[in-house]
Structure formats: structure tokens, C-alpha cells
Image (cartoon, rainbow, N blue to C red; front, side, top):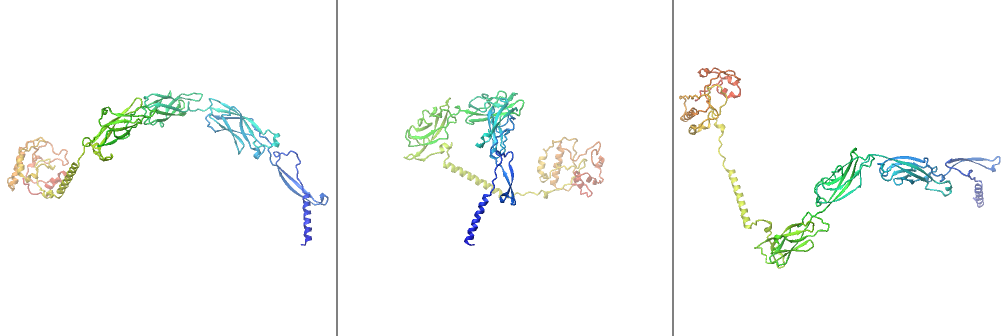
Length: 605
């Protein structure tokens, strides 16, 4: 493109821009006071024609949407001029009572509200806050209410716009007020204590049952029910106090001891008689005051030493004391020798006037050989009312010291043990114990290696004897008929047989002499033994006969074997069958074996 053409193009562009600016349209308001609250949106159709609007020109249209922006030109207004609300007298502080609302036709920040209580008798009992989301006023409880004190309140609430425009102030005022009536509803309340806290001081020596405080509570309701008092036992586990159920008198139930418990924190309860669920409580703090009931004493066991070369007036110990009491003017102790040691020639006590005392020697020339330990009783008194005192004993040991007063040797056993054992005595005691142990071990060893005695096997010396009974009613195994062991020593049996008697039963019939056949081939020893036993049985008037003839009126009554044979059959020499004994049970088993089918040889006697 040439320079001339470029210049021509730029010239035409400038002319075109100027013509565009020259033919722009301006939209203006046709009304003087437009109201967004009446109509917020407008739709305008714009037509543009060329050739100055002459006939034959071309035209075009467009639509323009116009939105009116808000201004704070509308004051707030309460739709209700009177609000009626109610609240329980038991409502807690900050609880909601109700809501008020002032309507503002504006929007955004122009519609923001601020609510305040400007007048009324409830300004001190209630408060109002603004909800920023919904622009409402929330009325809340500011302090506890009481139906018995005041039954209703009246509030004058104002709602105002915080953001104002100066050009629209003539449209105001931009605030409005409403009246709120609040009624307090009665509820059954628990008893109330006056005051709400008790502090009591009581001396520790107070007598049991003494009244230390009157606790008072009342029913705040109109009914004014009767009150019953008690103590929460979880607050007084030691049961030191109790309260009168009707008067509220707080009294001591146990002796108090400040040194054990100096403070007591208890809770007293008040309950309505007609409604036990209504219970009030009040804390009671009790401080136990000190009295002088403890004597001062040494805090520990004092032991001191004095050198044999100590001089008169030498300090050997400084003592102090403690007292569990706590007087108001502080502790002060006085020290002196006990009355029984007031004229002690060895030591003396000097009070330092600062609750301590010095123990000094009165003489020199202490010797361990003469006396190794001294016991010095010291009297300690306090400044309380009444004055209390106690006696503490100071143990002083005599020791050997060098020239500088350093201890070389002492004899602590002198005051630690009531009896002192020498080294030689101790060695002798240990030696005796050792000898005794050796003897015990030696005896045990000898017993262990001693030869075991020969034990006769009873099973190898079983002697079977066949005994024939000629009397009826047998079957029991008589273990006392004869002594097997006596057969081994016939002389002993003969010697003692003359005096042996049986006294455990009385004979019913006289004994019959036993017949011993002389044709038995026995040796002289057995023959002598049998004669001795026969003589013994004949001479024993109290012994029951083992081989006797008894006569029964009726045989077999109550027996499983039935009736026995006649009495005359016992004297018959004919052979009999005793096989029926096997049917009589285990008690006749031995007889069944002896007199069964295989009958053995004739008895020896």
C-alpha cells in the first residue's frame, strides 16, 4: 500500500468514528421518582434508523433490560404494635422469651436492623439481640425471674436502620417502636436458702450436740410449703455434724479435732414436705479453731555424747520441740530440767528463748567405767491456755575422745541393749549350737544304718485247726475261742490261766466239762496245753460255754435256715450231711468247708 492510500484510509476511519459517536442514543428516565419497590425491572426496545429517519431508509431494533438498584428510602415498620409473650419463672438466664420483627422494603444493607429496648419496666430483667440472618429481634432472660416478686413486664422495643443516606432523611424517621408485654408464669420451685452460703467457725473442744449455726430456707412459691432439712452424707462421710429436721439447727455429732480435720465442707439440703422432688441445697464451710490440747514434745529421739575429757559448761546438744497446736500468737516453748532431775550434778539445760535449748555439762571427769550412759529428763512447756507440758528424755553416752573432741570409741550397746554379751560368751553359745547339730546328725545317721529286725511272715505261720462244734446256733467265727500265739508258749498260758476271768457277760447255764479223748496221739506239750485250757474253762464261772447243750422251746424262728433237727440228733453217732450249710450265706462258709462233702479226719480234741 502506498503512502497516499494509507493516509486516505486513516482519514476515512476517523470520519467513521466521529459519525458513530455523533449518532449514539442516550436512555434517560422519563419519570421523576422511580420506585424499585413498585417495579424493579424494565424492558426497553430501541429502534435505530439511517438517513435521518427519512422515507426509504433502513431501521434496526434492540432490547435493553433495565434494573433499578436499591437505596435506603424506606423506613422500617413493625407490623404489630403490641406483642404478648410469656415465660416460666424457672427459665434460666439467656433463655429465649420471644421474637419481634420490623419490616423494611429495602434490601441488602439498606434493610439491616438493630433492635433495642428503649423503655419499660423490664429493661433490667430482659435483653434483646438482633439475628443478622433474618433481621429479627430475639428477647432473652437477663436475670432470674420470680413469679412471687413480679408477675409481668412491659418492654418498648425500637427497630432502626443503622445505614442511612442523607439525601433520603426527609423520608424518615428510619425507625419504629413496638410494645411487648411479658407474663411470668408460676412454677413449683425448690426451697431457697438465705443467704446462699454459710461460713462457720467453731472451736475444736466444742461439746457434742452444740448448735453452731441456724440454716434457714423458705419455699418461694405462694403456697409456702413446710421445709425439712438434712445433710448430704456424701459431703460429710465422717458424720461429724447433723441438722435438726424442722428448725435447721446445725449441731456437732462427734468430737472435733483440728489436728485431724481443720476444715469441713458440707452441703445442707432443704426439701418441701408436700413435694419431696423439690430439693434445694446450700454449701456450708466450717473452720475448726485450735485449742491448746497437745503438749509439746521432741520431734525425734535425741541421743548425744559427752567426752571423758569434757570440761564443765561444754555444749553437748541443742534440742527443739514441736507442737501440733496452732495458737493465734504463734508457738513458744520453755525448757527446763524435770523436777526429779532439778539438782542433776552432771548436766543442765539453758533455754535459748527461740524454741530451742542447750544441754551443758556441769562438771568434768566423766568415765565410761563408772557410768557409760546418762538419761536426762527435760521438761517442755508451751504458752497456751491452759499451759501443757511433757517430759522428753535425752540419752547421753560417755565416749572416749581425742584432744580435739573427736569421738574415738563409744559403747552403744549400753543403751541399745538391756544386757551386753561378751565376745567369749557369744563364741561359747555358738560352739554349743554346733555340737548339738553334730549330735543330731550322728543320731540320724546311726538310725539310718541300723539293721532291720527280722519280721515274721504271718502268712508262713498259718496253722489250720479243725474245730467241731456240738452245740446249735453256731456259724459265727469265734476269734476268742483260743489263742494261737499261746500255743507257742504253754507255760505262760498255764501260769496266767488260773487268774483269767470273763466279766463282760453273765452265764445263762452252767458250763459242761469238755471231753478230751485220751487216745489222741499228741505230744506232752500239746497235752499240757489242752489240760491247762480245760482247767481254765472249768474254773471260769463267768465265761460263756463254747461247747454246751442248750434247749430251745422252738427252733428256727426268724432263721433263714428254717427249723433245725431235734436236740437228740446231736448225740447220735450216725453220719450226717452238712451240705445245706453252703446255702446259709457267707457267715457259715467256714463250717461248710469243714463239714462239706469231703469230710476230713477226726478232730484232735
